[in-house]
Length: 165
Image (cartoon, rainbow, N blue to C red; front, side, top):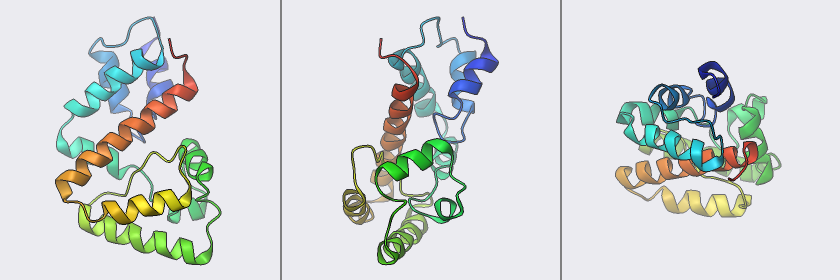
């Protein structure tokens, strides 16, 4: 069986800057000998969903703005950098960057956390359309949507790290 420190080191960043999820999954005995996508994702998601609203908000707030200041400064996590680049967010025109910056600010002001979307398979136009649509959601709708997107991101990250079965 994998040791706790190894597990947390390897999977503590699957939920952005939130190692407590991996720590609790391990400590609660949810992690067995078999490290496959499902055998890790399901317990991590269970811990995320069981976390307090403040803890879930902390996970959401740990995510960077899309094409935001951390991206411009080169300070994204390696996973976030790859994810944003795959959607072309590292190659925005000045006008596109200004639109993302404007939407990021309005979104955070309205909801209290950054816009989160699993960008795999999407391009900047898809993301912008989703951004513009979702900013009209209620806070409860958007909290649920953002949490679901965080779970998708975790699944995509685990899929790149582990065998399916």
